[in-house]
Image (cartoon, rainbow, N blue to C red; front, side, top):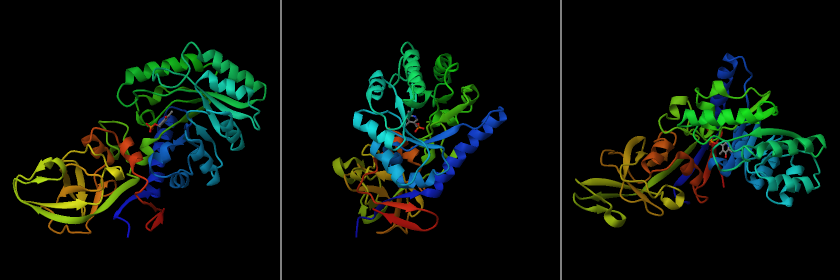
Length: 384
Ligand SMILES: *Cc1c(COP(=O)(O)O)cnc(C)c1O
């Protein structure tokens, strides 16, 4: 029997979260007399650790899928996804170009080497291009000075028939915590693109969920948003929970107790005796450690549930195990179900906050060795 640990992926929760975002965008836009934007569901990093296949199935209502790994993109086509697929970092080699044409991908260009490469490649099919403008994230994208020429060049190649279409995109650095800086980014984007771009894409999850930003979003005929983290039931904001937006956890990391110890007052627990029992404690040993993707930095006090009852981690997380206090959970025994995060457990964001990181990192760090259980409705199907 494999170790009693699994990551349960809920298709209904993924589907629900997409609907929450779509409804919210529709309500905000319609009340402002505008059409709902199109949605790229962002499924990079193996769909934030949830798996490409469940994501493709659950996000069937999205208008497109966005990611950065070419193999994951090809996998989506093999799974039957026929709507647009965008490669967020664009292409890196001429071989990539061939694949992108074959599968009709939408390709971001953020640097001139990418335009040069596409210009000389023998494209088997005209590609859809999104030109990225750096408005202050200072990661990818053309500078304010270089963007107009890059965009014009791509536009000329559209007219020459090499490319099928061109749009403009940018990425927010602080849509989760700083409206003024986000507005500066938007103003910069609008100043360079509003007269020339019919297709634009600007919002991550924080942009999609932040009502203060929505009214200022561009008025281009085709506006695509790019929500990621919220689709998986985690919040992009440190001060607002996913639950407060009506989002549901889509990934539940679940294990079992494999041993129970009685530890006397004054004795240390685990490596380094990082935790000392202040009174006699009943300790449960959980089949989950940092090699499963649980954060090693999670301190004593990090929330967890055992048999549906809230308790806390005690001592240091080991490679394959961690310990929890079950002194107050009389029924708890070997085989008891432990939820590290997700449905019927703490939110992934609360575990992340205790560990000094983000839900993003925890969701996509769940190790390969943890079996994924895909939940379609009520029944669970095992996938390797
Ligand atoms: C990851 C990513 C997104 C989605 O971001 P979330 O914060 O997960 O919503 C959108 N756009 C780009 C370019 C990204 O890299």
